[in-house]
Image (cartoon, rainbow, N blue to C red):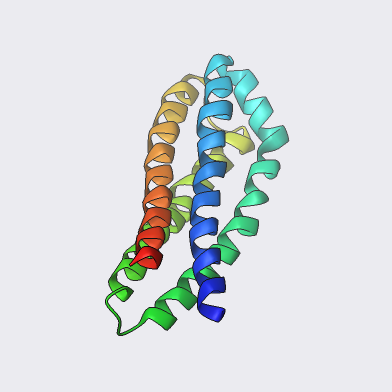
Length: 148
């Protein structure tokens, strides 16, 4: 029962995080790119908190599930799959803290020169898609681990 709970949290959490990020990238990313840079900065300053407040809600259960799944699988052939899933989510979390938190703060803070916004947003979206891929891979590895 405990094993199933951890596995479900790990897989659903990783997949859920990928889904939230996919929605942000496709829906909001497309909208943001359609705005003039100054309007994007105004939108981001007013609404960034809605995005940043959702991350902990999804990341916390994911980490609990991954740590528990790795712990329970330790010493079994499936441990390597769970560890790889954990590494993928670690990359997502590192990218979030090292790249997205500062970039989002720069967008929301309004201190970024308007002529730099389009280039920074294009880069943000490219790195964001990598983050989505790592979360999807994490979820897929969890599914494979459970199926073995």
